[in-house]
Length: 282
Image (cartoon, rainbow, N blue to C red; front, side, top):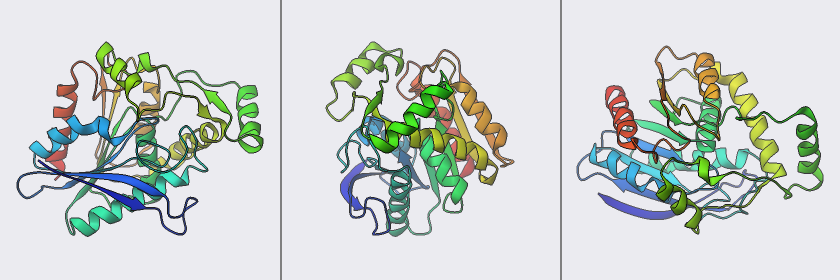
């Protein structure tokens, strides 16, 4: 497996023009079957997908990933985003890179958590660039829905104090494996502070618009979710699956799994299931 680290720049039309995004490519030893583009979750970074990329390259896939704006080694303030569109701009830049480096090769979009929300939202706008998509633990519905009063306060703060910290996620809900939780907390590239009011409001709006526009997704899609996910409700995956118009859609709920199904005990089976699905759609 060969690797290559590089940087992408957000275009002039972006809300963060010229921002630098850390990018990495993992390549198989031989000719690639297809390209997989990874969209990671909130507060984390592409380096947490090294084992996923290794499995994909071993199966013959070329893998591209970025650190989203405000994450990992990319530009931007942690826990904050000026608008949800900054993440969509990053995916578009990654698509352009994959097209330039692997012209004519099929591409699949792989997203986890917030990254799955970004991926699904991107696909509601344009699904023509991809041959299919795989979503892990998509953040479509909160486990505990905020009250109308909390939503109102959050929206007001997002306008008058957009960087105010509001939401604190519990790292213990990431995985049943204590070693994974410890590594998450100790990782200097993982953000363990509070999510800002602006980002929280943007994500809630994106959840609603993604569900509303999900019928626009007509490509083959695999949705995977842990049954005991305490960060993104499994019901959100079911709702998204029900609204997607694609005749080729698969929903897999992994019994007992926490939020990060690629990092939970039994992750090898999840990754193998995903690769089998990709192989069937290449």
